[in-house]
Image (cartoon, rainbow, N blue to C red; front, side):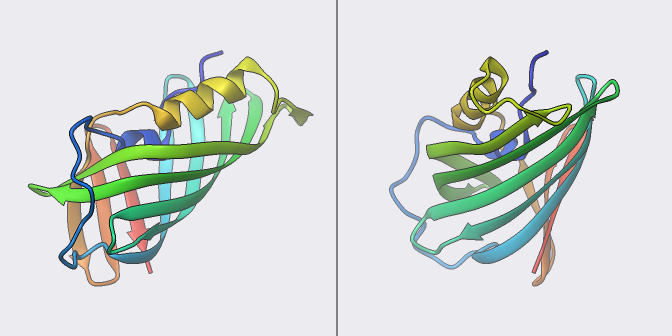
Length: 152
């Protein structure tokens, strides 16, 4: 079973990266984010608390509750990165990721290759999502066939 790129891997993007975001952006601050997943045979929800700091740092705690066929998968992780908005896209450069819990069908799998794959996915750059600001209290990260909604 391959664990696909999740919420924060979707946010990873570019090897070229500025050292800090200096001007205030519409996504500065602490956000509660949710993505409903249905891809690569994995269905479920990712919820997270993301703190986009004006100094260009991002810290996130995420929880994934999903199923592959009928097998439940539960993941908890911490993630930090450098971030900036470029032409309406969220660009991140991962700095660290730690998988703090990983269970498959209720069995602790924290030391499994699946947990290692999940961590690698968090640390691997992916396509930068388009940031769509809905209001001062909501924005969306949009990519083909997936949307993450963030509110405060």
